[in-house]
Image 1: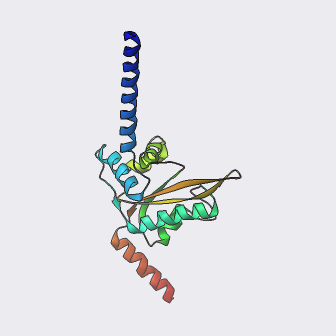
Image 2 (image 1 turned 120 degrees about the vertical axis):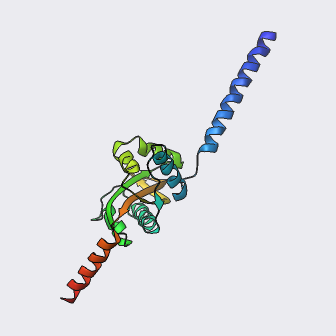
Image 3 (image 1 turned 90 degrees about the vertical axis):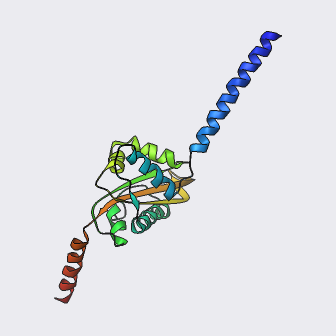
Length: 182
């Protein structure tokens, strides 16, 4: 009888530890939002002494439009329907010198999204590129047709960029104005 009570105590102790650690992990996990993704990305950068990225409204709009377009047209690609990631960025009048895009689908937490990106060399390179200064994240939930099966999912688009110097942008605008007058 004493041996049985000891086993019960051990099982209860193990279950308590499991529940504690499981709940601790859930408490650390955050809902997929633009703000949460940006925070997790910046933690990755700061852990490597790379300057954090600044949220940019134009990139935010570009990323949201890209995620929405992928849900509406049912694709999950960087390039589709004659559109590029840069089409969305330029469409928001963000003039960049360099830019990058990361996509994710089907994750439940911001940490899960960023962890997957960090485990992919190309996505990791985007996140840790010290030249990037700005970020925009578009998170859209919706139905996606996966091989004939409709699934509810979340598509996340991350746009990273460095703006062109203002003088360069000004020269471009003046040049375009002159061309339109000719």
